[in-house]
Image (cartoon, rainbow, N blue to C red):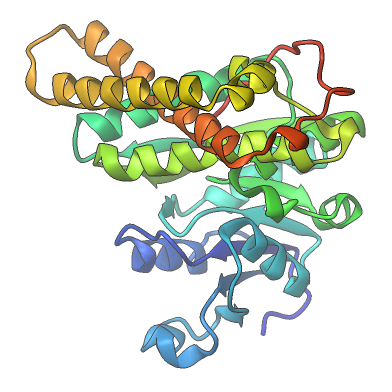
Length: 325
């Protein structure tokens, strides 16, 4: 165990996309003068399922709890951490050797409690390139607007603040990343941007996997609006605002879902096989991205009953938060 670490790197193990060894090698060999530790949280019941990994990386701390989703695993790792700061990242992110040093210097120099790393992409095809571009555009908008964003590709934050706000509300899945950002903004937390602190993110290479992740996000968004605290509502989509009419007209709801499914198939096929300009191809990618989130919203609405509709809240449309998955 690292004595008195200043930084605790927390990594959930699912979805390493074949780059776990690169990730752990990069984070355990950081060039930084302050002590740091690396904690990997898994949903496996014990260390036996990890094979040789604990022997390959003896300085890594492994924590286990079955049945947890990714956001709950972040909380599990954070609860085991000893560092003054948490560095939140993913098991398919590969850091530069000075990643931690660069971001730590930014928070010390600017006297701020949190900062985000920059991220380039490990892009194996045009789908991966599209994901990287949409993330970069969205992320830079957040930074430009001085918003609080726990970018799980790489964010350094005071562990005391993380504990004060209770970490991720993991019951809301992917959307808990938006909810924790809203909490931080309500507290007046200042975020920085460490553009020289870089992680390389392994982007998705097929529409099926990317779409499934975004569908889950759309459902999580509606779940947060439906079941989350009233003072933490952060995004109202057109689908959510139409929930009463859609839930009361199931055939219309199913028609909308089927039409979107068909459009998604056509978008994916056209993106991969039709000749077109780079600009048009990216527009098609954005449409697929947005369509997948809509499908998630429609799926959640289909699971609701008429008596689930809350008529007293969410009657005015807020400007939806930008989404960088």
